[in-house]
Every structure is written in C-alpha cells, then in structure tokens.
Length: 97
Image (cartoon, rainbow, N blue to C red):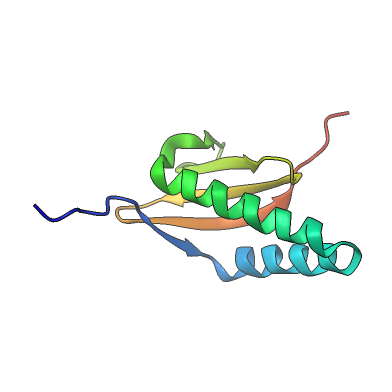
C-alpha cells in the first residue's frame, strides 16, 4: 500500500514571509549564528504545526491560531484550510508588563 503524506502544505502570505525574512536579515547583521538558530527553530515549529495543525492556540479572529516559536520572541499566526496551512503573520511577541 503506498504511503500517503497527510501533512498539510504550508503557504506564506507575502507580508508574513517578508516580515520573517526582514527579521532574519536584521538579526544576521549582529549575529549570524543567532539568525541560523531562529531559522532552525522556525522550521521545527512549522514541521510541528504541519504534523499537528491544532497545536497553536485559537485567537479572537475566527479560524486563526497562534504559535509562539520557542526561544525566538516571535509568533506565527496561521489559518488551517482544507489542504493547506496559511502563515498569515510573523511578529514579535509582546512582553507582559
């Protein structure tokens, strides 16, 4: 029996992808190793979201979930559709006062 890949396809909104790449570029200016670590953590997080789409917590926006990428200070907002996971936003996490 052929193996089926049940993971949903990832798709970035242009604005989210640009924000992510700008973050990597900014961090790279000070510390290339830190930028590589962020990229690795994002890739691991996206793989986890693909494997378990409900991993993130629901937001006030219907159908949108958020996932805090460990040890980066950043959050991914995403929407699950039929066969895709759409990365809608990449942003800095707010600090609690």
